[in-house]
Length: 72
Ligand SMILES: [Zn+2]
Image 1 (spheres, rainbow, N blue to C red):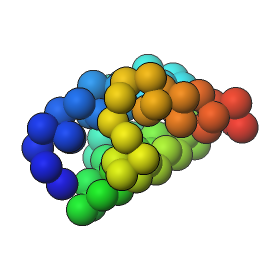
Image 2 (image 1 turned 60 degrees about the horizontal axis):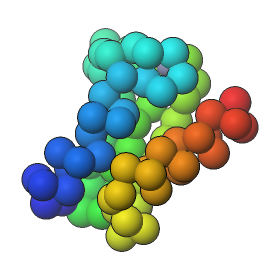
Image 3 (image 1 turned 60 degrees about the vertical axis):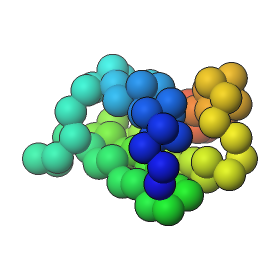
Image 4 (image 1 turned 90 degrees about the horizontal axis):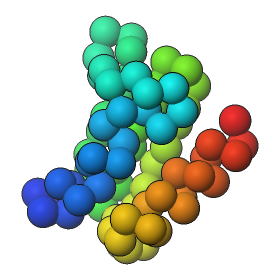
């Protein structure tokens, strides 16, 4: 993934949008980055996967995050 793209999306998911946990690793959560997919999970069961080809505008990513939160 292009670093510039990553840097746009990462601030929205660094802290878990559900519980605010800022940690990954050690069972706290995970952050995976693939070519186009960025994935964030958290010990609170938050699990978010986003294809950056869908667009990286803050509004779009936030909407996708909100969809996940609604289903929790
Ligand atoms: Zn969480």
